[in-house]
Image (cartoon, rainbow, N blue to C red):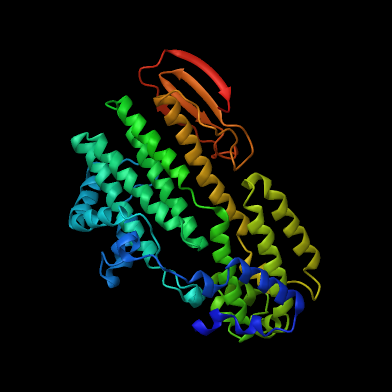
Length: 413
């Protein structure tokens, strides 16, 4: 079905505005075919060393097993949980070290086939997660048995390198999985910071690691450029009468409840050109908005909701865009922003606790509020990280080793 990725229906559509938009996207290099230009040689590509670590038929099961072994909540294991995690890690210790060697390569490109649309092979996501979990379990063992904080910190470094590789892909599913992986790495960092034997040098090492994460932060827009290419492929499915391929079980259930599942293919085909124009124009606005922090994008999403509500009962309602392609769009942007806020706040706390020098990070990209920085006794804390709503007001605390026993509060750096 890769022929659909060449966009034959879109290219042949007798619709000037649609052709103008396609010309702009082509000039920017954003079509599926253009995004499929993968030229990184294997010796420079971390992905080349990761993809064959595990037999293909075992990857799903290994990912599921690692999910089961990873603790919910804090990064804490009871005795039995820890032994199970250690056994899993030992079984694949050779692969963990091979992954580390691969991650030393300067680049990473998993070679997503944008021309294949939703059928592209994304099994590498599971491989990345397995490797990250092996590092997490190694960190848990180091903390609980050997009290080797340096080894645990090194495992965090590799977890975050894996997240960096995953988040660099022009596919929103990869970008979101990278955010979730970084959240797990953050839990390991917090477990390290809770250890009484923590040294000032180890705090400084963690500070440098988190600053490096920020230096290599992926451009929010890149993931949405890839998502737009996937959307363009999906309109080819619509024109060919294959919209059912796009539907999740939830989508099918919803359209069936509305007694519209049978009519959906013909209705979507009839308005495909106008629908796709709405989608591409909207995605252009969304991609351009990524130059601003999330809290400044919120008004765009509100305007989109209002516009779609006004069009809902008209023949201009973009059925495919509104019901399938733009669903959960704002939620995904929020995940991106929360991911960034987490690492800005942790980098702030770690850097202030190690060098005492503030970073030029002041405003939470999720909310627009200033981070709240406190020095209380031997702790540096950073708050105003979440939305501030119930159950979403985390504070990061870092031991302020060797500093004066002072208590001050301020907002921003």
